[in-house]
Length: 314
Ligand code: SF4
View: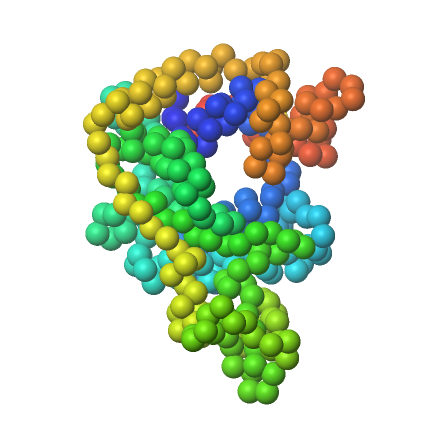
C-alpha cells in the first residue's frame, strides 16, 4: 500500500471517511480544493500563470464548484487569477520546481506532496487564511510535515502562503485586492510611510481578476514596493532528526496500514470530525435522515473507476 499524508490525515479524522474516500469520488470540489489543484499544477508548468488559469477551467468543466454566495464564473476566474499570481511569486523565489517522486524506505511506500527546487530543497506549500503561532504549530505537527520527514528522512522547508479569509466567495488579501488612485489610477496596497494610516474613501477598491490590464508582474512589483509581499509568504526550515518523533511517526504509519485495511463503511461515525475544515464531504450520507451510503447519492458521488478501490487502480 502506498501511504500519503492525505490518507493518514483522513484515517486519523475518521475511519469511515477513509473507507468512503477509497471507494467514492466527489462530483464537487471546494474553492480551496480547486485553488490547491490549480496551484500545484501551475508550480511545475513552463508558464505558471497560464497553467493556473487553464487548470481551474479544466477542473470547473469536470467538477461542480461548491459555492455559497458568488456566481460560478466569477469564482472560477477569481481562483484562476489567485492561483496564477501565487504560483508566479513562488516560482520567483524558488525557481523551477518539480514534484517529489514516490519513495520507499524501510518497506514503506510513500507518495510525497512536496515540491523540489533545482538545488534539491524540498518545500511543503500550505495555503492559509492567516498565520499565527497556533496555526504554524498545527501545520508543523501534521502528517503533511511529520509524515514527509519520517518517510523521506530529509529536512524540508515549510512555506505558508497567506491567501486571506474567504468572504462573499472571494479570498481577501493583497494577492487579489488593491486600491487605485482616484485620478492617475496608480495601484497601491499600503502606505509606505505612516503604515497605520489608511487611504481615504476616494481610492477605488479593485479585484485583480477584474483588472486584466494590470499585468501580474506589475501587481507583484507594487506589492513589494508597499512592503506587503513578505508578510504573505513565510518559510521555515524544518530539519530531519532521527529521534523519538520521527520514530513514533514511522511506527504509527505501519499501524495505520493495518487500520486502513480494516476501515469500512460501517466503521463508527466520528462526529467530532464531521464539521472540521469546512465539513466532511460525506456528511450528506452519514447525516441522512434515513440510512444511506454515498452509493445512494449519485448526484454527489460516483464510484471510482471500474468499481475498484483507489489502491487497486494505482
Ligand atoms: S460525516 Fe463524519 S462520520 Fe461521516 S465520514 Fe465524515 S467525518 Fe466520518
